Image 1: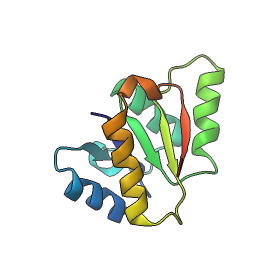
Image 2: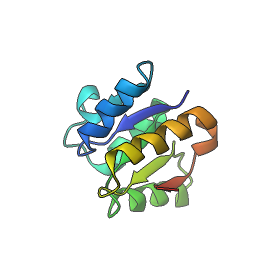
Image 3: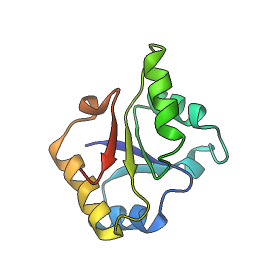
Image 4: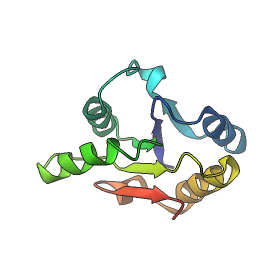
Length: 116
C-alpha cells in the first residue's frame, strides 16, 4: 500500500473521503507531523526520510522544488499534483486506483499530475 502525506492546503474533503473509502489507508497530513508552515523543500525532505508520496494542489512551487531535488541528485519520494478544481469524488477514485495498482517504489523520483 502506498504511504501518503497530504500537503498543508490539500482538500480535507479528499482526505476524509479517502479515509472513509479505505479505512486502512496510510495517510497523514503535514499538520499531523509538525510541518505546518514548513517550506516545500522541508516537506519533500520529510517525505524522503519517511518514505511517503506527497499529495498536493500546489502546481506552482512544489513541482519546481521536486525537480530541483532530482536535478541536484537528491532523492525524491514522489509527488501527486491534483488540480484543485478536480471533483472530489474523482480525485478520491484516482488516488485509490493508484494505491491499488502500484507500489511505493514506482513513484520515486516522479511528479505526476492528476487526473491521469
